Image (cartoon, rainbow over all chains, first blue to last red; front, side, top):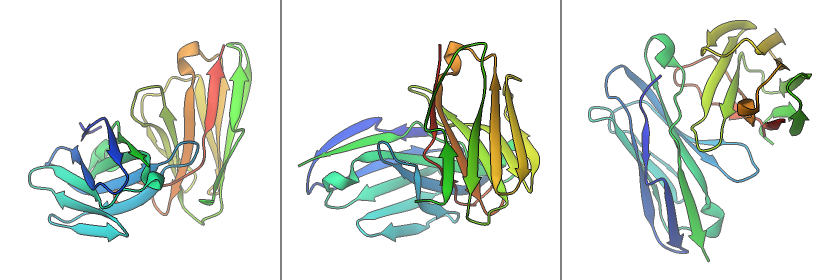
Amino acid sequence: ILNVEQSPQSLHVQEGDSTNFTCSFPSSNFYALHWYRWETAKSPEALFVMTLNGDEKKKGRISATLNTKEGYSYLYIKGSQPEDSATYLCAPSGSSGSARQLTFGSGTQLTVLP
Amino acid sequence: ETGVTQTPRHLVMGMTNKKSLKCEQHLGHNAMYWYKQSAKKPLELMFVYSLEERVENNSVPSRFSPECPNSSHLFLHLHTLQPEDSALYLCASSRQAGRGEKLFFGSGTQLSVL
């Protein structure tokens, strides 16, 4: 099990604002980093899976970057909309042993106010 | 619709009851998972099955008993649970177990133990 930290814990932004969150994880024994989006009363849904240092992924207004050497990933949302309100979870996995399974962070709860 | 179906959505049980949670995936995946989400805690991995064999058991008490009769179905049998076992239980599947594979989650069973 890996030590995963996400910040901030919660965030309120106005519609149209851009925002970003951080996920920190151990840089040793790294294999992959996942981001999931979890809307209230729905299932968690995968946004991105990144494996290489310097990876950048984009899906519409949401993008993510990965730094495996220093052990962090950023998730960016450009021009937030109320439908972006959700909890965003990051989950790294390691390359061996029990760390091969994903370890989830506590999440960043985003509320976008209209 | 993520292709992973869980039943029941809600369950209330006494400490002496025996109940089962059911999960079914229609995605042709080879790995299935049980996760637990307790209040104010991150998602915790309970069990992983790969091709119907249990490959991970994260020190889960024996009052939780998983069963994977085939690669499409996963059960979690519950008996003599404690009130602290009240939580959201999520099932997930992936093409293969562990590492970089994206998880597809069901909607969860909200369990209350009285």
